Length: 565
Image 1 (cartoon, rainbow, N blue to C red):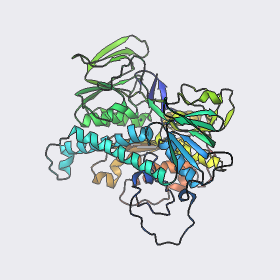
Image 2 (tube, rainbow, N blue to C red; image 1 turned 180 degrees about the horizontal axis):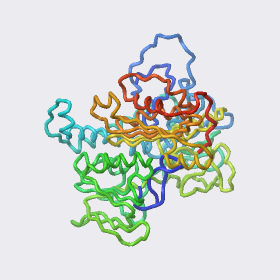
Image 3 (cartoon, rainbow, N blue to C red; image 1 turned 120 degrees about the horizontal axis):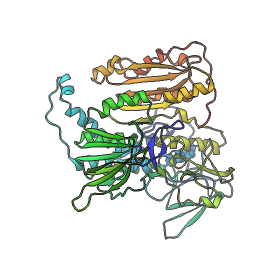
Image 4 (spheres, helix red, strand yellow; image 1 turned 180 degrees about the vertical axis):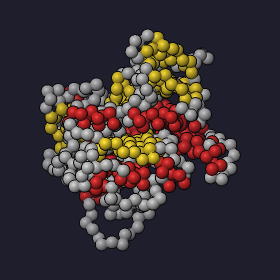
């Protein structure tokens, strides 16, 4: 049984327990900018029939991405690259492959966009946009502080649900059109590896087609994990897939798991009027976050709202509402396994993480055995067989390999693989990949938590330093009356290496990237502290954070190569 939370190896991992803890117009000489939304490139947001303007700059050589998707594949193959799965990871890999001149095909058995676009980060952000506005309108004191008078706020449930669905549809269509416009072949059906450099695809029960490729990427993603003893009916006992449709707003809902998914949905439901009860297997809520950030977040996101919680318990049995009877949830003590309580509520959301979707891929044909459902890979995303040997020309990215279950991590892994198959070695530093929880206020993080950093310091024999800044000292935050929040820096005083940054506050998800890019580029604090930030902006929170760090040397030196995760 698994749940969504943080661990020392990645910002989001699957952990055992049943009750545990988420542009500019499209110019014709487009260079496939790295602008992302949940790992999506800007093509996802731009209609392919947009007006095209002529740019006032010298003509440049047309890239391979506009010359027909690598017109000639490697000798003896149908394609240079075949990707199984058209989620954010597969999409990012495909676009980068076209940039590199590779003849590319992508196989999708469901719909383009995968979990993120259709059942995850995209529609959930639409719901969270609504909850954020509802909270602001409902906060009379907040409104009066601006001199504003607002009548009682209300909402139309179907209108809110339509907003989420319409956004998912728009992004999905634009993703599909971007692949087509760049010449990527979209092959419909279930993809199966049938041997080295060979894949078949087709609809279940129908005819199948076999194709060959110099390289193959598996990018099949994940599905909601439902623990044993939980009966999901899709109406009163639901997963995040169902919750995003917002078919109902229950008066009282239990959320099993207090990780990213659970926290975000608690934000939505309480803003729309529901009472929420968390069921968490560990002894504290939000167990994967940096403890100091988690403690502050609980004080702001949990305690003042209509939320109560049970920690240190498993939900061993959940029965849907039926024949006038409510949803029943049986709880046992996580340690002693003794019966603890029985809850009777209107609905239950199972937010215990996600499980890799790797069945039926034909892995046995290349002697690969999954580990807890995940496909084993090395630091270059190369698939490892049951004997510990690399499977030539076969890669796995995203949730299916379990390294870091985030949409933008999948995209980054895909781009890294394409670099490799194009002849340039590339190893992705997972410790530089940020994560965010889009509550109000938001939470974001990159690198190590304080306990993880202290463990590393003790093991390797160095000291760590902690620096903090408050949103209460930031002019822009005060102008918005949003002074609640802190930023925390964990670093090495001896050499200025950034080990981790954690932010809780307004637009934390946007602010984290200066830190994540610094880690990725190996930038030291003694260098980045001289960067200039516009005033007054929220970015000055991070500026002050780096400036407040006490580094013992002013000498710059490149950060040593990170150990691949």
